[in-house]
Image (cartoon, rainbow, N blue to C red; front, side, top):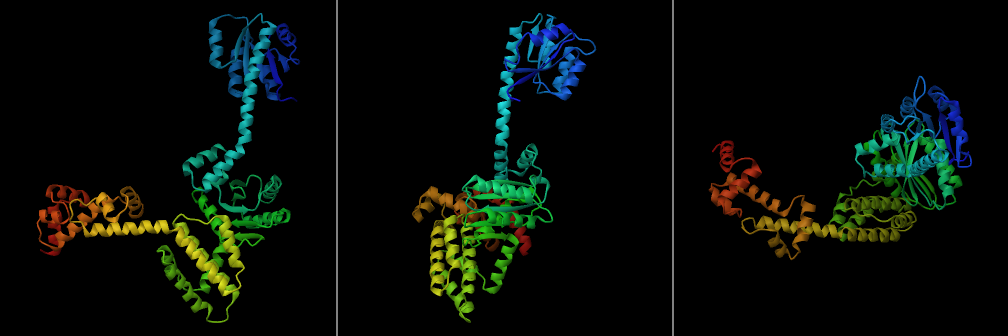
Length: 519
């Protein structure tokens, strides 16, 4: 049946009137279909239980249940149905009541065929427009769901807002169930491979037991309802994809389960961590986060030296110290016996893991191609020369990547030292410090607050009050003398700032400290 054909139900207790309405217009030719012609409201409701029409033409004056009451029932039980009142009554009260109920039109008898058709055509336009809007909503729904999942797992939506949308979209899995995530990375060059992925998921996991979102062109992230055999189901999906995929590289990384929607970003971060540290050596790889953590712990046990000194050297930009650390590491744990290639490769992975962790602290990252190249180089290292060349080059790159942050930290340290040494200067300010350090005042203000967590003005005031407290504790200087010693010669202003910072007046502070010190 053509979806644009509009169905009509005619209701009139006068049989002749109903026949005239049915036969007076060539409905089929005009794109309409008469579903039934009935003579009472009760019959109309029974017909509607079997087949719902798009439009109901109904008389008002009918026994038992009149047309207005029928319209109320239709509006309540079948709100999508459009109603046209046909009556011989001309009283305004009927028209007003019909409008209140929400009918589409009000036609007076004797009704003309062209008038009745014109009304049907007008209502049809409304119906088709609503159908088109609904179709667009249905077509866009999967995209809306994917976007919602992406915002949840990346943490870019408030939890309460997310739950509200999940309820509206009927997606209880993400807020009522225990969940696990897995990240699929491969070249999705054609829709056929993605269809194969979804078919494998539907078969292994269940059509309503997962949601997914595209993170990048070749990265798809799935959230799965956790069951007793979920790990085995993911393994089954991986095997099926390995069989159908023509791509050389296929990586599936799987998170640990989580209990609530608040932990959803952890699902993604675990998958990404396992994936980024897994060698993608032109093969098909399935890695569970729990196994990945076990492997890293095993490597750490193989090399008991702590990496704190290495991390500090890289963060400080001290390339020589970082390289010296690796040399000492090699001397102590590698040269102690035969040079084993697996040891070098494991050590290379451990160094890479710590180095990427340092970069993450500074919000710096290698792109996928760079990470792939590093992993591939480490996985093919066969000589000490290759190991040293790769490790030293990595250190140089990372120190360069974090150099901007390190420069900012050094500048803040210099500013803090200058403040400590010049607290007695009344004019100590942002502009004075910037001038002394030969740096732009706006830049200094920005990096100081980013690094120290407070503005330079607040830092200066805090240090002045802290120094004044030391002077009160350790000397017998008077208030105005202490105020001058911390660069605040106005004793009254100093007293106001002191109370604002400590919660006590100067006299209250001195009195309490005398009691504590037994003075």
